[in-house]
Image: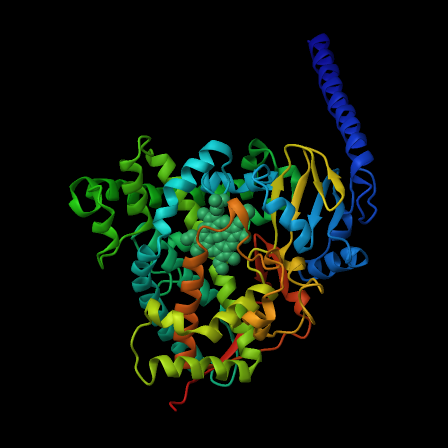
Length: 513
Ligand code: HEM
């Protein structure tokens, strides 16, 4: 027995030593190339990660302190623990990566999402991604989006009722609007993606809402704890058990809806006919899921229930928190600047007058100033502050070589603050997006929805949703937001750019002109 346990002990030692030896060999090869890229010095194994071991409130400041000395470089190198990470911080470096069709594989940290959203459009690569993107693109056709506007308008009106109650309960005091917006965007994405509401706005204790919140919390937490990376270790932890329970609820819900929709699809002529006009031309409620079933049935490779679930869950993940923080940060900015808010309201008044009618897509075309304000808000507070790629073959960016195996991170938060493209970048100035002020700007200087092959498929959906919700709020209330004196301490990049202390606002009923 003792001989066997000695043997096992030595085998484990040899395996561990060979892993460490291999790692140091690889690190040496990487370092010879990568340390030519400017960036802060790290210590062996721990890199610069130890400098980030601070409270959530201090993370943004710590990152700024770390990167500030390298502000003039378009490419910056970091050692995140034992691994090199390359940051692209300017339009000219982001352009090289995003315009290439070779480097579209997602970075390793996306795998933490996969227990929830599987290998769907956001996380998949190669042929699978190409096929899915082709199949899903028609679901975001502008006529389909028009259909979703019904839901966006309905939910915006419910939001206004919820906000009326809140402001009556908080006369002369502020309250956090972010969780209320988050429930509204969850209701919108549930109904548009699955055709089934979860009524999170009216029932804050919804099982589905709690499960989605648990999932995002656990995924965020896991990203900061590399030792929880292997699934088998993670599953043994409390967080792993919370995730398992939440997945049971979320996947259970999606599976139930898919089953129901499949049954209806077989008997619903309008949807199952291979005639796009039938769906596109009609004012009937079609969910993204219906479109997937339709596209899948007309192609030669029908999607399985599992395939459909991963796409629907991807929409749920991508289309909820992103729009929630997008709208919330926009309200923060608008609430700080009464003159800008008044100009937006005047535009809305010209469109709607005193009427309480719903917004149409035609109205959105007339919201020219709103467009500028939303762009400026997405510039200052990009909802997805970073996104990453795994480099599979040698790449050169702005004169620096990036070897295969390395993670590259695009940082819209920094790209959007580059002095070469934005004068006084910390100032909120919607006019910088007027045609005459932006004609010479590099198109890769504005990247809230990424660019190139893997850009956001839901971009038009998101902008439409922002306009529907914000126009409804501004038609009903004058918004004043509580100024964050130290804005960096209210920012944390946890999948989305989250406001740590929320977005505190006061709302007063909008006086009629
Ligand atoms: C303000 C709101 C939104 C922002 C800022 C945003 C931003 C982004 C960004 C930056 C990416 C690229 C991520 C990467 O490369 O890893 C992306 C991808 C994606 N987004 Fe959005 N998004 C928003 C809303 C939405 C909505 C509403 C939906 C769906 C209804 C959606 C669906 C997707 C999907 C499926 C992808 C993956 C596309 C692919 O790889 O082919 N997004 N989004």
